[in-house]
Length: 117
Length: 113
Image 1 (cartoon, rainbow over the protein chains, first blue to last red):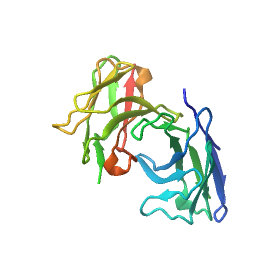
Image 2: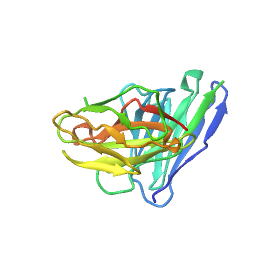
Image 3: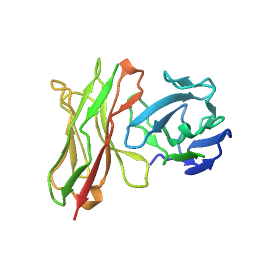
Image 4: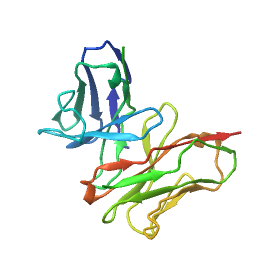
């Protein structure tokens, strides 16, 4: 089956530093990937849509300069949390659609637990 | 905008009990509906889906029927097992929402032996 690999699974960083999270589609090409944020005991909130070879589309209220997204190839998207602060601590999850069709199911990475101290 | 509402948890059941997790949605047009499951320590994975009214999605003993008249997609299983303990998310994707997948809040299920 289609696999989405996300790395790292956990990261702890100091306030003010930047953290990069990678999302790879291992056995399919993804022109579009989706980045979600999951708060404790809450649902997944779509942060942005990552588009291969062009700018990401951010959801309302998500800071573009804080959460930098790069989708340089058909199998890799990265999310960089810049100048991280404790309020950025969260669970970040990437996903992609391996199957054709805009309504086809998402395949998810295992997520990255970010803790900013 | 489009949205999904599902029952709050946690839900605690004994093994072999009947499970229902309610899910209702708001969307213009004809969304596709999904149930995703997140087992402890793992990422989300698709459990089942339905793409049009009256469709029934099923997998691993779970079922859900797309009811357009009540805008619902309730998840059911006749006899739960301890291994079904997980968080269940109802979700939709629709052209009117740019095909972005919108999730409900998630319902945590605990099954006791």
